[in-house]
Amino acid sequence: LQVSVASSLAKVSRGELKLEEVFDGEFLVGHHSGSDLEILVAETYQEVRAGIWSDLRRHTWGVGLILLVGIATLNLVMNAGFLDPLNSLAVAARAVGNGDFGSKIHTVGIRELDYLGAAFNGMSEQLAEVEKNRATQMHTARLIQEHLLPKSVSVAGYKVAYLFRPTEAIGGDYFDILPLKDGGAIVAIADAS
Image (tube, rainbow, N blue to C red; front, side, top):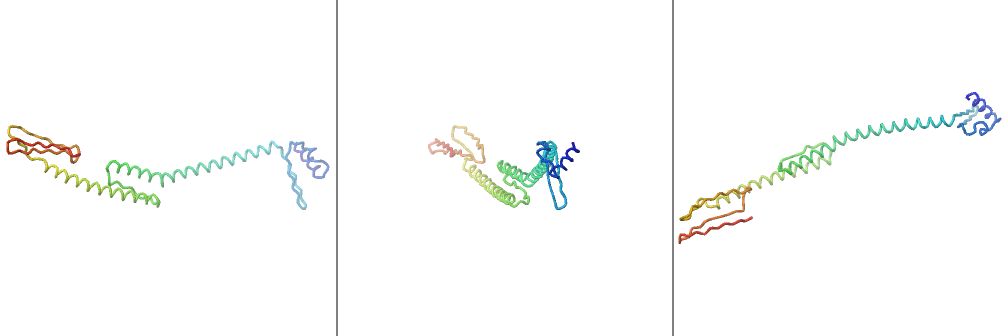
């Protein structure tokens, strides 16, 4: 076949044959001519198709491998630089939500996340201060409430006792027993919730 193709190409180049007569649609022919050089190349369509598919597969695998490496690298960068700090923020937010008002997050060197972290840390500090003030005020309110309750209760002819345990720092319950001159008593019970 190679000899017949070569001799046929020689005949074509001399103008003795037309390409359609020789190749009858089975070959792909390339032709180049220069000042003192003429090149004719002939390959079967099968060889050309096989070469194209081989190049396409090789390029597809190369591009796929480059994409895979790029995605893996992007994933590492996103985890280290973005997702880990956001996860840290979420953990700290849950801690604040559970009452640990001093929780803080660390800066990571990314301007937007550091800004968010600074705002969160400022909020956490303010909440801690507000909680400290609230606890102090609740303690003071409890002391005031305990002083409002009677220290000892006595009513002639009756045995009186009480136990006061609010479910929180202070309660809305109040009571008092006021003795009257005629030997009776006024019993006052209130719920101020």
